[in-house]
Figure (cartoon, rainbow, N blue to C red):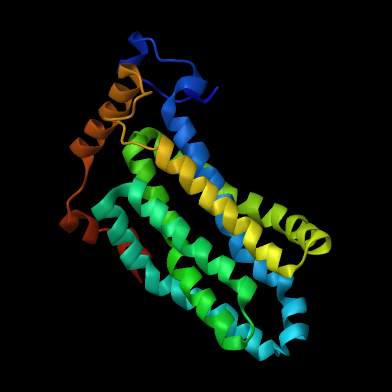
Length: 246
């Protein structure tokens, strides 16, 4: 349905493959799934917190500091992760980011003190921020300008799915196994995602399953964007630019 509702100007005369054979939507499905995993990992601590507070005698102040370490890690990791995605590309960059934060999340299972969890949350934050820089980079490569807002909306919508499924999932794991497993199992899902990503992801130009029609559709969108791309000076003259910056 998406393939028919989105404008496909010059490519219509070429027979586009059916929706399930258009590779960019499978790439988007991978972005959706990793964003769900990202938020499950991020939110797990909140549902395990009562057990951790009791087990390790953590105060509300301790817990607040631990949570703040995660946000500080995200802030510190934004620029390095963005640089990594630009320099190495989404295949390596995303793989590194997901493995990085999955290891940090798994290490929560062996934590035993405030400083352990603070360190692991900071570490995890420096990796989780790569989900969005990697997603934006991937969408920029795989989707023409006319589809990028839709693709970004789908990826961002995965955060709501993560918020929705985390409470029952983590509580179920804790009841059936233990609190350590609540950190380990989602971390393993992240590693499994990386295996699929490494196998399936290629740039549009080198992907073995993309058709010439879909590749040309993506590239024609890039040409349109280059023709209308404003200069930095033009951007700085816009009030909207300064509103975002400030």
